[in-house]
Image (tube, rainbow over all chains, first blue to last red; front, side):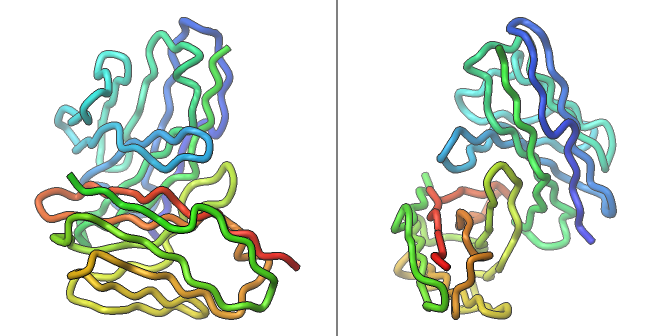
Length: 116
Length: 112
């Protein structure tokens, strides 16, 4: 149980295009979903927290107009990187919380974004 | 602001040895602490979760301890195997929100 999927696992795009990443909780309802980014050999940095049906809460320094988050249902959240640039190349990981145990998050396998 | 540090940043040990990974945090008002494993290019796998009221948790060859007052946790791996090679991350959940603050990670290599 508690499986989280991400799609796509890897994406390469040209500078200036937009990329959408999906995060799904497969066998539970996620009251809250989180989006992280991870640069090579670094730890995870939280970008935003999203609750179903409400606007995402972004961490300081994260541009909400650039990283659009939609949490349309209790099992799906999407992250859209708008007008991507090479500096947006990173590993993006989502996680989901069922609310059963405070602070417990289940992580997706990640999406490797490369912007040329 | 919570800060989480892991020492060492990298560790190589021969197969079969027991080892300890360290995690320290600056704000002791935590709700729980988790240890994760991350293989290269992959997501995170949860290993152990310790509630703030607990002192340790065990799963197979893994044992995690928590000393909240001193802001420290250790992950003990017994009889290490090459398959244990990965990056190990600790993360704390503070009261007030469900955000996790991650440590810097320890890259572990088990030498066959």
